Amino acid sequence: MSENVIVALIAAVQAIMLAMLGRAATQQRRTREAITNSHSTHIRDDLDELAAQVRDQGKDIGGIRSDIRTLHRHLLSKEKP
Image: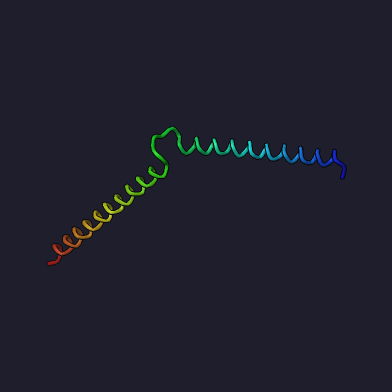
């Protein structure tokens, strides 16, 4: 291979790498904007708080179901002569 071909190949590879780095930087910026979304807290903290709220609501619903079962049994026992 001639020296000119080698220089042209190096320049082409360099151009491709710069384009790939530019695309990666753009994707990183978009990801950062989507995650931060101008919030003052980290997304992980927000998700952990939501998960805790869902668990608490699940416990509350379980308690309500238990109360309904107890009331149902109580009503059924009152109906029997």
